[in-house]
Length: 372
Image (tube, rainbow, N blue to C red):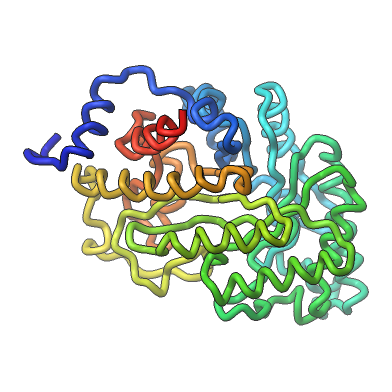
């Protein structure tokens, strides 16, 4: 370590990383608390990185299709579906005894423009778009009927102030597009769990908008099983007390709560880029990429503290939290290397680019050990 003096509590984590050659699988450490998931895509399955799939089976018991089930990938043209990549993910997961999360059925991003227009380029009517939504959901959910644990049915439909986000789904269909998506998904696979998924929905205003959606669906007898809090977080944000409050509030509505796309950004990032709205980006500057060659030990230990604080909270809520999914298997796979500022080198996960456990890994292991 480059730091000559470390706080005593951090020395124990540092020594553990250097002394423990056999890092226990995350799924085993947190068995009995919640599923531990990761995202998976073509890169992991391609064989180009022979370490990827064995690592996934060692540490995770749930996988989310990072892109393979999004509309633009699985249904890029009218009447044309490409299931090959998603089928490969399914085969790998089933052969490995892992749960599969379907991501995502209705979203404003990564949805082709043709979805909202007819063959002449005119905007669809409400009825026509509902029919198109129904066909898509029935085809995709039906294809995996009985195989997927749960679906992110609607993604990121709420704005920061708690109002419904202005999207083609909302403007063409109206406020009830969300309930219709959930109805269609339930019809396509009555046994699958159905989730609403969003980022920043731990914050009070946005949380209020999500609770309104959940309440509306429940009052109408429409199935919804859980709320996903994405967890695209930072060293300085959010205050985890709002996560604590959100878990309680969503659970009190009868929802399973999941952290669905988690990482902790360690790079300086303008606050207006916090969240996960993929249309927002900023130009590269060296000052925003300060750790291009390696992460300083001091920052790695900050990351460890942050993860420890979070998992201390999640373990307290293990009767309400059903799954924690990391958005990437190691730092090299994280989308945070190129978003929201392309070309940066980020270090937001528990394992480095060579699959070595970082102090953050040992910090959360230590939190779980306290409950033994």
